Length: 156
Image 1 (cartoon, rainbow, N blue to C red):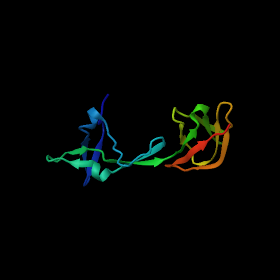
Image 2: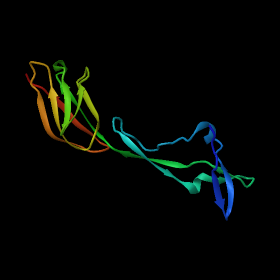
Image 3: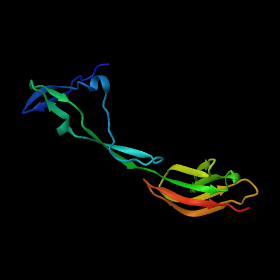
Image 4: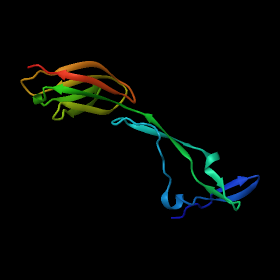
């Protein structure tokens, strides 16, 4: 595969070949400097800075050293909580319209429902018999946020 074919920069009306020394072998690397929340989906907005990316060398040639700022944009939220007693082996569902996301509580009763679109959800906790299920309506999920339902206690 050929890299750098036909890449040029024009400075004061003169066209110069534009080399990409490290990009030819290692590609472009993106660094995200933000703190990201586990279980949240993100889209990265890439901002290419041409002014910082084209560098003149000591011998009057030009290199392309891409400066790309990665800006994460949260596109989902999550719901978490704890269901007790653990012996109910509960399944937990988050329902928004026809979209349903489910999880099974772990050995400590913890559940986590990631990747949810922003909106209001109906959360259904479905345990094994003899425990009664619970429905929690209007659970608001926002992008870049984890809604904590705390401890949900089941009765039998």
